Length: 310
Picture (tube, one colour):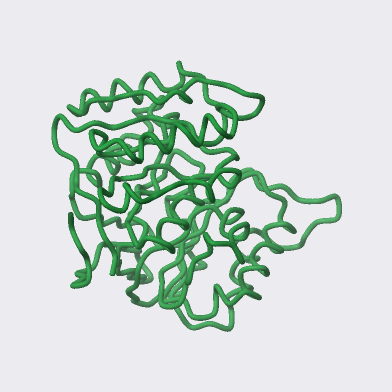
């Protein structure tokens, strides 16, 4: 049974924090102004614009900032400024008790995938995989995808239709939507943040990886049984992919298709999610229907009797 945090209304408060990598405060300004234009109050966490080496503060500072926003009942959503790396250094020390009592939307992607998987697996509370603060700096290019954040937080049912990709495997399936950054999905295997993917629709994306490493991470998921009993697979954007001096020999979608060749579930390639401007907000943990035809792909929220809406 998935629990869905209350949807936001005008005047609600969104906190912006950076629980992982450093991000300059001026890079968040357009995001702040846009949230305010949407009639939300915005409060800034102590880690917003703060830097300690690579991170947006020491482990203790980042933990304290995230914990305080999880515990603050006047905050209705937590917007992560950026990803990078750092959540795995603090995830096991977070106390989710007040968050369980008063769920709120956790928003972000990339390293924030760890929060999505941890909360889904341990708490069965929905979260929002979505563009972060930097995406607002190119509003004209990103308008449709930024709007998907507002629509999602406001309670509008998600439904996205995109053109079919030649590598797609057509079909229809339903299941809870889980996933995120491939590197993080491989990283959490065997930990308390691991996810059960059986009968789920899994989505994956990544950036800046070598092809052989993507192959290795997918083999890790496959050997751990994460790809065997899916309801469906959504392959998002894989950007800035690198190859070795001796070529790997496959493009990225061929590489991924090989890993799921023996399975029969629908597979969608090149869906607009990932480290790109074309990055739709997706509700992690919520039940979706994925429908693939030769012409297009539709991903939309499905009716779910088991949802608990706060």
